[in-house]
Length: 268
Image 1 (tube, rainbow, N blue to C red):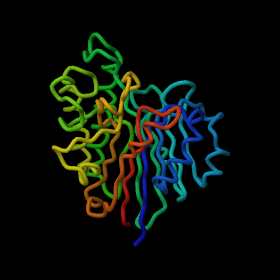
Image 2 (cartoon, rainbow, N blue to C red):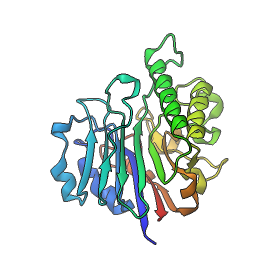
Image 3 (tube, rainbow, N blue to C red):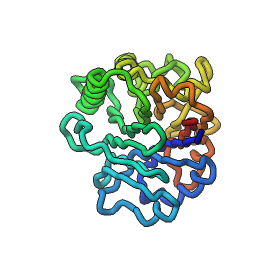
Image 4 (cartoon, rainbow, N blue to C red):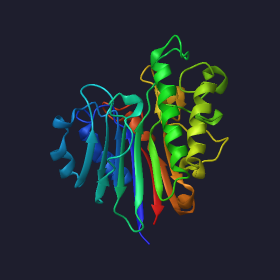
């Protein structure tokens, strides 16, 4: 039996924060590292620096200044070429691969639209795009049926549970925790029969956050966090979850992202 460590992190610019990956590797030891918000066109992606860190196998889907996802791996994989172009925008928010592990493993890295500041479809096109994106992903999952030998992760930009936010009452009308978003994300999860890997280890009502705003004067003292980053596994992998980590110290790194890396370990 072999162990597989998968980490997801909204890095908020892969070129700016490339030096931080050494600390991440030392702390979490990922076999596979999935990034979001890389903000890097494919021709400028820092392949040499990532090769030096031991990630021999890499795939990136990026654009200048916005969005972008990447999968870095010590394990060979095949890029899935038939996955959808969500909302027909070509905006680099999803990358899927098939990992070459015993029995195979399908892995999807998502960066869901943030949705702007106004939680109203008519008044805010960004919020409408977020809901439309999730609706398409939900329909796609429903058409495929329950996931098997699969992991779905990334910055999903929604904190679904009351214990995923510092104040359920105060954030009910704040984008990322509104009822319509929670309903949408829950529907997506049910459509693929996905299992929430982090809540396997930290069940509600225990608080669990992966993001702390840059706006906080002292993010650690105020601790007004949200769980925006998720790792879901197919039901057949739920019993193979052996370890987890939300690496909170990363929020204090020099030039830190406002998200922290999240890890799960599976025994395959």
